[in-house]
Length: 546
Image (cartoon, rainbow, N blue to C red; front, top):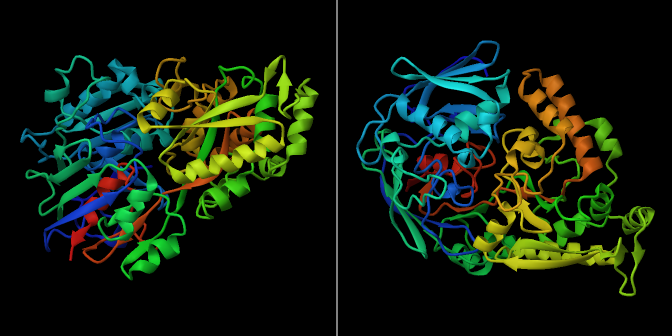
C-alpha cells in the first residue's frame, strides 16, 4: 500500500468500479429480508468487539476506515478515511478522516473518535480481536483530521486489520462504559447506513439512518434479519421467496432453490476453511503424532461430497484455500502434503508411539482411549453431516469421535474459552492466506483455558511460527511473503494444530425479483455472505429496490 488519494464520497459509481454505494439518485424503500441460519435466537447484543456477534453490526452500523475486498486482490475503497499513506519505511500509516460524518444520534464524528477507538483496544486487550497492539507502538492525532498509526516494525499486511477490520465507535458513548468487554450494546450508535430499530430474540430490524453521511443512501430502507435455529426452516423461507438474501448451506440447491424461480441465483466463492481445532492443552492431543494420525484418519473428500453435497471442496492440510489462492501453494510443501484419507498410515503412527487397539477396535495410548468429543454448531446441518462422515472414517482407523451438537451460545462459549477436546469452526480469514494462517497459528491471538481467545482456539504456541508471521508483516516483498507462507504450510503439515476438513465458501443466494445491485461472479465487489463483515455493509449500500 502506497499513498492513496480517494474521492470525497463513496457513491460516485457502482458495479465493477468498486465504489461503495449505488448511485445517489433512484428509488428508495423496500423491505429486504436476510435468511442466515444462526443456530439460536438473537441476544440483541451488537458489541462490535465481541467476536460472536460483531458480524451483526460491523459495516452496516459501525463503519471502518477503509474497505478491503478479498475477492478483488485487496482492492481498497475509502470509508471513514478519505486517503491514507505509508511513511517511515512502512512503519507509519497516516489516515485522513472524513469530515461531515455524524453518529446516528446526530453528534459529529471526528479523528478524536478514531484515536479513542484505537486506545480503547489498548486499554482493554480483550477487545483487540486481531492483536493489533502486539505490533503497534503508538497511535496519535495529527492536526484536526489525521491519525498516525505507528508500528514497531514495517507492517504492510496489518493495513487490513487497522483499516478494514476495526469498527470505529463514538467516544461520547463508549468513554462512559465501565466494562466495554461485557457491554451488550443493545442500542448501538454508529456512523453506518442503518440503526437497529428494534431487536427481539426472533428478529432484528435495521432501518435507514436518517443522518447518514452519504446522501440518498441507503436505498433499501428496511432490513429484516429473522433468527433461525436450524437450516431447514431458513432454507424454506428463502426458497419460497420470503427472504431475498441467503447465506447458508442448501442441500440439493439446484432443485430446492435455483429451479423454483428464474429470479433465484447462487454463487458461493471459497474464502477460508472449516476445520477441526485440536486442543493442545488436552492430552494426548498435545502430542503432534496423535494429531498427525487424526489428520490421516480424516476423510476430507467424503466430507465434501457427502456432508457438503459437493458445494464445498475438500480442505488441505497446508492451511491455504487452494482454489482461491493457487499462487500461494508452495511447491515443496505441496510435495510433502500426503494427508489424504489413509487409516493404515494413521494406525502406523499410533502404533509407533505405543498405542494398542482395545477390544472395541479403538486405540489406547498410555492408558487413555483415543476417543474424542468434537463440539459443533448443531444447527448447521452440513457441519453435522460432515462430522458424521469424519467420525465413520476415524472409527475405521481405530479412533473414536463423538459429535456434541450444541446450541450456538453454548458452542461459541466453549470454543472461545477452550473448553473442548476438538472444536469445529471456520475462521474469517482475509484477503490473502496469511490472515487465516495467522488466525490458526499466532500465539498472541490465543488465551489461557477459561479465557476467551479471539482466534487460535486450539491454544497453539510455536515461537518459530510467531516469528514467521511477524516477518511476513514486516516485508512488502511478494517473493519473500510467498516463501514465508511456504514455511508456515510446512508447519501445518508437521505440527497439525488444526485439520482443515472442507474449504469454507461464502454461502450466497439472492433473488433479483425486487432488488438490484447484487454481487455477482462477474462483479465481486464484496464477499457476498451476510455473515462477512464489513462486506455486509458494502452490499447494503449497493442494493436498491426495483
